[in-house]
Image (cartoon, rainbow, N blue to C red; front, side, top):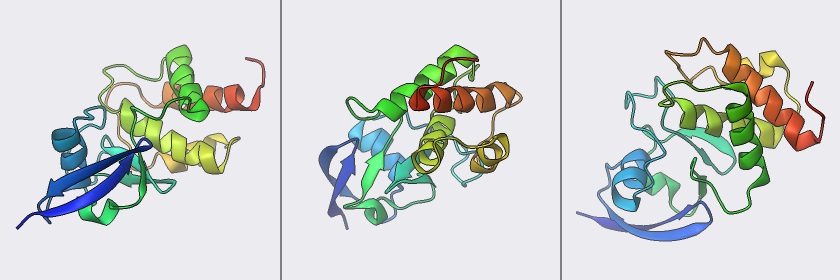
Length: 160
């Protein structure tokens, strides 16, 4: 028995027919077509599916789509003119915070949630924000440096 829900994703409104058991990840990727949000372990263990829901980083594989109805959802595709998301993307590009790129959308969204609340996090705070995001390629240092660079960009600090 399907239900109709309204999802507000990247400042756009989507009316979607879903089954009650469908995850937010499935609906974002398969029904709406925003494939930047990755499908990883589907158990909340890798973080590649992370999106920001009402300002908080959320594993979209662990949230049922109907639970997100009416909430503000941000995916890695982003909103037009989102200065913070642009700074994070630039930080990742400048500092080489990606290799294969599969985990990158999840890290970017976790960084977004962190920097929205704390624009100048310490290295330890960055590590804590990424506790649920896994990467098999980079060793994390470049990812941490990417977030530090994004923090510099948004605060207007010159590159060190």
